[in-house]
View (spheres, rainbow, N blue to C red):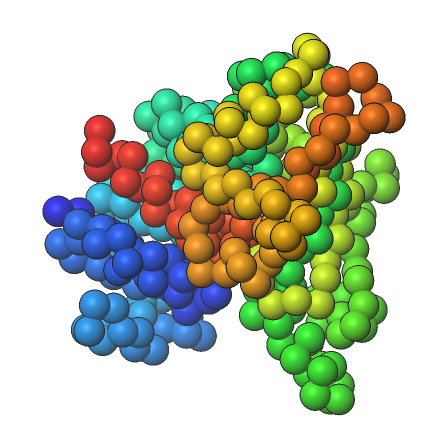
Length: 327
């Protein structure tokens, strides 16, 4: 039985973490919930019990075995180290620790062994990276990845409650009180923040670097374009792969059909393929529209969809915790 904490418990991902912990019957002895001082004092129901939220910045983590963090980059930078000093293992959903060479970046279906190399902190990858890595790993093992091109179609929930609030305000004909983009979200597409001299967005850079780290393939040739869509849940990705070797399409179907965490939905003539609505509230990564790319030697196209709040965040973090307690 584990003493567990959830930091950022009042946010979208934090609440989803609590939902996943309940659903998976995680072996909890005691649970404590944390958030900002502004949210401290709120009560959240977990397993039919109301639990009061504590101020993360001014709380001790002593007595906790594991803490799931979804508190944002700056909070993770400071509070995660405090939790580790108090003897707690941190599984952090924020971006701050992901590329630290001393912090493993883990997708349990892809690199579970890395979870046990931690020094107190384990990083949860970006939501779009997770679903991509789950699919790329078995294909890389099979034929070797020569080059990968990815275009994402990401839901607004990936930007948190702030993004959803802007979208719903616009759909209701109201002026948003807060915004994630100067552009309108409703009936529109927008890019993530672009502040790098390379002209790649923060999200695109994350996906490139994180995929290389998770696959232990630092020289992987990968190019990414990330786009937000005015939908509330589920990320989709168009993935083009060029393999090192000649491939057999039937073998690719069989490999993905049997891959951990992957569900194959590929009968396009019958309109059977993954969609964001189908993937909502599910923990798998769904793949379809698999077909040869005739424009390049040894190339294929495929379509990958997953729930960004579950497998893309909360479920992956809980699965890492399950790895630790099984060990």
